[in-house]
Length: 256
Length: 227
Image (cartoon, rainbow over all chains, first blue to last red; front, side):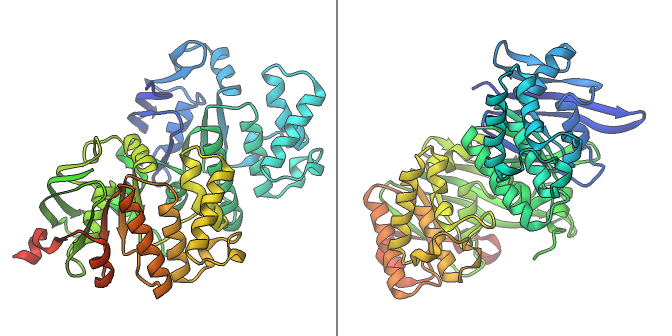
């Protein structure tokens, strides 16, 4: 089987400081991988390098494109990479306002991505947008309201609808449940799990919340000081961590 | 179906003076289809540890653990994930679920993951929950608020939803009343009849005697206890 995403030797430096160093892994279709580590461990830098938001200093990010098979997205042309970002890739930001246009209605936010891939029929776009907002449990009568009138949890769900409406194959998520209260988190987690299963999505989730990765991710990478110190099955890494830092991380979680 | 060869495990506690604890040393046995093997030994002997190693939840340092054609010790995460979805079932002592998901969906989930249509998966889940005497009015609620025994039964229903060829059962009859214990034992017998290879931990001796064909005393493989 061809990996959907094959990351090889990704390195990013900020001057003398290491953002992330020599990260390699393969992600297969339908897999969800979690990346955990304390803040400053390089997990967001890595995510942004993979998603094309940052240019890595070294390494390859090979994506199995629909048209041409595996292609290095780091060296591909800017328009090509942008096209990927609108079609097969999706990026869910930690703060919904970074991923939404706050001055445009919820329906418009979702519809914009459809227009970016060439849909022009207003009725179709509106229909699909409404359908997706309902799938993320936002009432159809809020379609014309702006995200500024929504709660944080609702904004996050609009962002997810906007990202998934074009049927991406790979979703990057940066702390998708961060900053939400726990009851909203639970609902969002359930929603994400269902979408991943039903759409056969692959996803890479960066978070510092070990409970979130346990529920969502099949595989886990633990990062410290820009390097991957341990990787494996999520429950194996959490229940039988091998590296000193992973052991510290797991044993530091407060029991509720 | 399940075959362990010269399996050993140590825990290294890096943050506690790098203490190395040897927990399992040189275990070999195999379980044939339709057979149920009990792991025995005092509390702390390593029964659950061994079971978790077979599930791939704990890393094994030496030896091989073959389930069907796959060696868990060498396998890639995605191979273990596929194995757990299709071949290897595990009923743990504790239920771990996404909060607020209805019981019916929790039980149907393993079937949905296999691509079984929602209606069929749900029908199977309803059937199991009814067999295990979970009142129908609870099916639409999340099991997180249920009593210990109810959670245990939901866990069992989930574990038996798919007809796994290999199963691991960690204290499946603990905290159950006589009626439900009987239901669980007949589920296990049913799984054996259809050819499942089962490894179980039972503190309930009568249950063990009834469903298990052989016993393996884990303390024999626990270095600290044997010494």
